[in-house]
Image 1 (tube, helix red, strand yellow):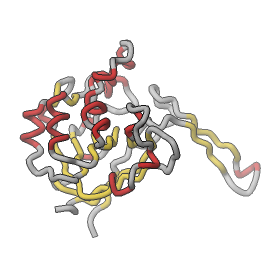
Image 2: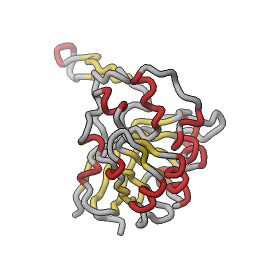
Image 3: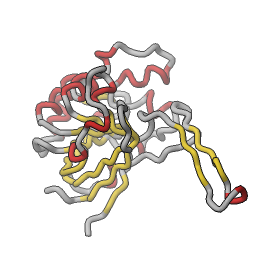
Length: 225
């Protein structure tokens, strides 16, 4: 049986950016069952973006067929970019020759091993996807693309004290999501994948009329050749 690798970032109640709230609504001392309540943004930690995130008329999470985020995947390693540097079109094309139409593309910087997602450095020092790299990804006809780093440079603005960027600076959202390619954000453990191809199951929560959803993402390493 292939190894199952969890690509999900754990939800951390003390995260400085998203401030999720997790508390015991009822304890064993208060009744026969313990009950935990959780409140968090749908775009926090590992999650799936639906086109409604950037398009007021776009499909919502519940309109995205499950097989859009389940299937063969290609791992595209962009660690050559390094910290605080662009992932160029030439770099990603050289790393992604094995990408096939209909793949889920996993863009791997190994960033969760460089900086921790619960620190400002994770955001302020990350590499980012250029317009040319996003256009190259789109040209390969993927059905979804996932990242283990904050892939649009402007995502760091809130962390470094700058105002939110214009919509066009959200490169992958404009050039992939608004063209029908689903985004899977803030993946982890991509360095545990030993093969350039895998099989991925990204299961977003079943939320109605939502622009995204938290997701558990699993990979079957080496499956999907």
